[in-house]
Image (tube, rainbow, N blue to C red; front, top):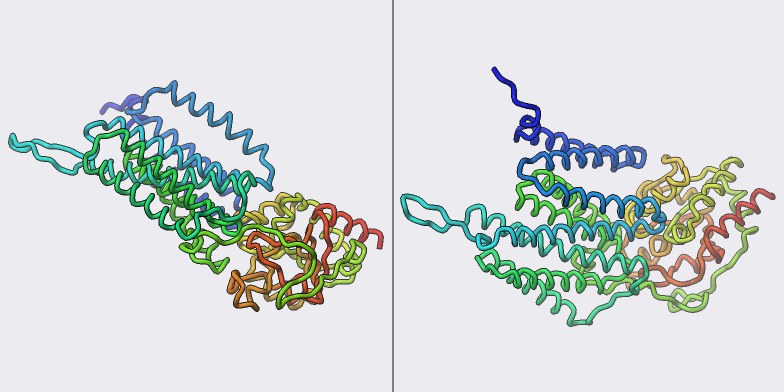
Length: 489
């Protein structure tokens, strides 16, 4: 009985598939780890090891070649990706997620294009000879064509849509909805029909590279047209939705290339992204179709510090010394972080304040809304960076029952997610949205730069509540001043 040479064994189909199975198991285990803050880092590392194994398995395939080009691509990716990931500020993490997700979609679209060029005249048609008779059949070529076209359209939409999301989050583009009004949905529908029609023609046997490029361009226009009308309030959901799109397009590419790693990884990303999108939409009391329809949330501004309409009134402004006194005599304080904390990079200052409160015997916790900030888990990541104990972080469902026994809620830049209009005002665009019910606290301190509204572009009724005090200023500076006043008491 002779044994196989090592090189032959490493390139055998059985060994490669064993590696893929190991990689898939690590993907799933890594995803499970991401479900909790205490295991998230370990889960990310496990998934990274799984991806490394999947890459090795793919490179061992005897059909792989052009090692110089592969090495060049890896070198460029490492040279760009590692410094970008290490240098990005935590406040800009949503933009980076959008950008990296877009790169994935763009890569899928390019791979699909290359696959089309490689298949040439066999794209969309396949023939076999049976008993001397040539029979046209769908076969593998049509199978590959369908998935390649699907991946090209969805990948292109994801790439360009993610770029628009990045631009809005980075404030290169206005956060307000940019649309053609009532004609926008008609334009979107026409672009979708054109892209699908081009794809069907290609699958049916059209061998025009110009048609394929035209399909990519139409899909690109569709990606821009879908995301531009969506306002900043819905951008976290959009990022998650586009992430699901990229996963599905990657899975389709894996089907076309017969690559198990792409199929499984893409389906995991697509499924998890879809579930997350649905959960976030529910957290905002919004349907996914209404989000895609756009027109909600513009991050506009209102002038002055007085209420208007039925909630008219004045706000009560206080200084850091007054805030310190309220906090010093509290038994229980809940910190409600929002994007204002992220912009000011105030998480470390907040942690110093809570340490001072804890040294005085004050019970402190943090209430986290699912869509606080600009992406899921944004606040959790910032607070973890500041070494806030995980058990102090309370999700909305756990935090809301506790507000009634809370002496002071300290709201730092969280606007729409604390607005009582979601419960009290049926005419409000956010009516029905689950919020952090800070208004149930005995007193509320809101740290905010100005009276400008949040992403939804509406006034926060909480600010005109008689038990609410406004401390205007940069979050980091304001929190540091409160800590200094507290230490002097």
